[in-house]
Length: 138
Ligand SMILES: Cc1cc2nc3c(=O)[nH]c(=O)nc-3n(C[C@H](O)[C@H](O)[C@H](O)COP(=O)(O)O)c2cc1C
Image 1: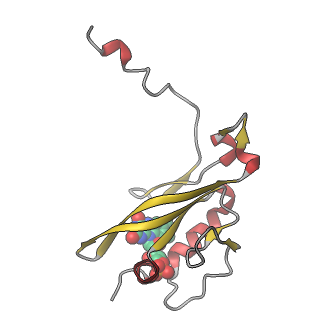
Image 2: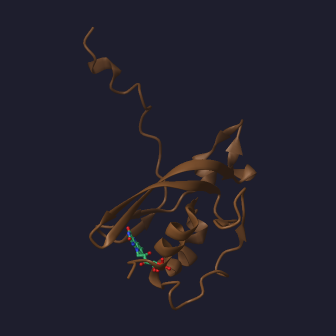
């Protein structure tokens, strides 16, 4: 038996979606992780919408959604790792500032499994591709 009910659908349909919840959706996000679609209908917890394929629903309430085509499945004992190609990305327009993703507006829900805690973003501490430059020897 599949470890997650969702896995059966991904394998049958060949598509899946990645939906980034914001802190606002914490309770519902935790709930859909606590119960399985095998015995609980979770389809009404969030509103769904569809991109160009009709068998991979995306979550309307989540500020970022990615529709993915399954390209490879790695079967590990008790686990499946799904690798997909991102076909479409949707972003809530209210989370865009000057044409760029605004992560403070997205307010993504973060999770650390070691202490089973949900977090929100803190402050920016540096710039990628710049902080380490001074260590590069000429
Ligand atoms: C806070 C939280 C974190 C979770 N993290 C993972 C995880 O990292 N990997 C995983 O396989 N399942 C994880 N789960 C468990 C799945 O979300 C859970 O088995 C889910 O009910 C599967 O749903 P499905 O059977 O409808 O596919 C987590 C659940 C919760 C509540």
